[in-house]
Length: 452
Image 1 (spheres, rainbow, N blue to C red):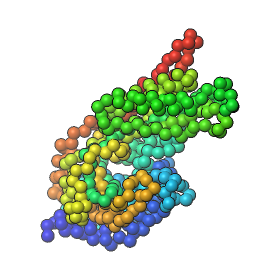
Image 2: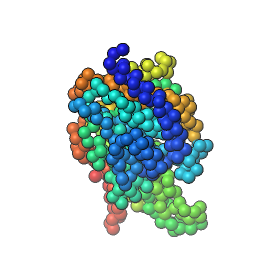
Image 3: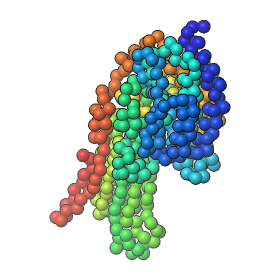
Image 4: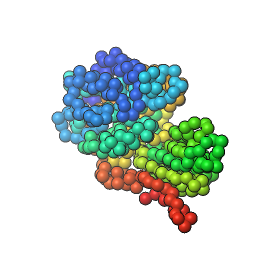
């Protein structure tokens, strides 16, 4: 047996030895689901697992999440492995957490469980023999871009700078020195990887009208009518978004009025503007903002726009895919592997890492039910957690063997749009806008502003 095969088998055996702990972690985090930047129970559970294994961890402190390092003692790239703590809010899911209303309908609990197996295996005696470089294990909060109001409150308090957990970790310097980023996410019935994914701007529109009795609407100014007119206007201009068929705009009303017999004076609409590249997102976002401002002006309402960087479009590194497919072929039949998954119109803050370093997301078999729905359950926890951990470890061996030759090649050949995180954040901030979009002048003229 070749040295790399012996190394992999040693790591696979170590995962099998802690299989019960892995599956227990999957159930605990499923049963204690929490949404982004609130995942303190899950944080403490994962922290206990790492401390039990003898790790020194670096906690974020004022938000959930931490990281820990494993070093081979030989020079080489640093590989970052990411597991996400947060869940979704799906009120009609039968297994939602009764305390928080959250449920892991995207399978992040499986990522955490697999991380328990990876962390345990890397502490096994001789686990890093013959490998070069180091590994940083990340347990991160808040990948799902939800509860924007709550996250804005954290920003106003000075706790957060960005809405996404990986963005925040990146900003704080926790990802400094990491050369390659990887994650294995739960998927459908087959293993696969995408060729890339959308990014987005996170949007909040606040319409301000004037309240009056519902029986006397002429005395008021209906902010809800302004909001519905705005959404209809965007629907009317969708065909003018351009040739990027990946653009998505899907608003919801998060505040629509106080009582049925009161004309709504304040209405809040939230949405994303998703797209496949920053330029098309910016262009379509400007058009949506112009439509909303025009609708507000037409009704005589005020409008406050809050656009904040969501997630950057994701660049999938093709050079990193083959080692993962190699691992998948070890554990899954050909029928369980999908070689060419299409571009994802969903968004993830792994995209923010992908523009700074070679990045890969693989999707492992987990459930026949669609994610982000009331039907999602973990049907195959062994595949989603135990096999998941083994694949990640086998992939690490490939990247770190032979003086980390494969990693160094992938890093050298990567075409990345930003050289530093400072350059990246500066570019993303150009998508942000905060302020009054409509002003009414004494001479009867109206001024509309919807971008910086």
